[in-house]
Length: 223
Image (tube, rainbow, N blue to C red; front, side, top):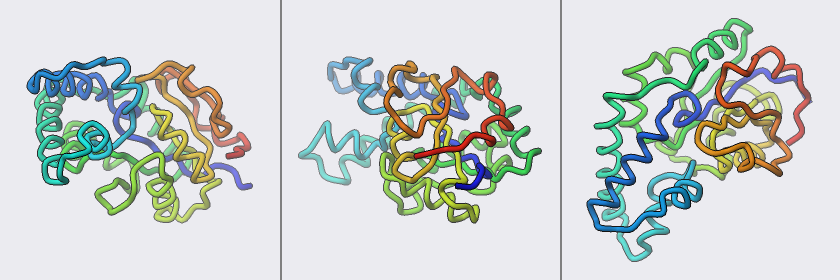
């Protein structure tokens, strides 16, 4: 197994501190409909999932068009909040710049919508930090399927074992495992205990200030 040559970053909750805003958007969305919400249980169950998957489980009788409309409303609420308050995860930019300086290949691998990505990329130069961005908008299945990570490795010209994934959701760590990749958990959204038992987990940290790109590339990953 070769050493790590590429870093694959989730976006929401990993590079950008967006999850509190998604939280607030979902709370407002439920309130508009008079729906009760156990917020902790909801976010633990849905972290990392695409909206259509979340809404299909909530409203199995809804048509695809109805789910799209519901998702659009929730994401509009999110963007209204994020446009004013979105920040980077602590240490993210410095970490990425160090990784680039070391010659690592970089990608963003996200379940985010094109509109939400556009907002984040307009607010921060994330698109300029990486070589490629992969998402379900490319016709790929979302996490925990490995498709997005495998496509990123293909675009970077790397074997899966040469890629290390950075994620804030267990579904993302599982997707990395299925892709044959090691992973680092950012405990920005869920506690470290949520990631227990994943054999491909190399490290966990509250943010990027506790991580060093060089040391992470020297480990031998077994997914």
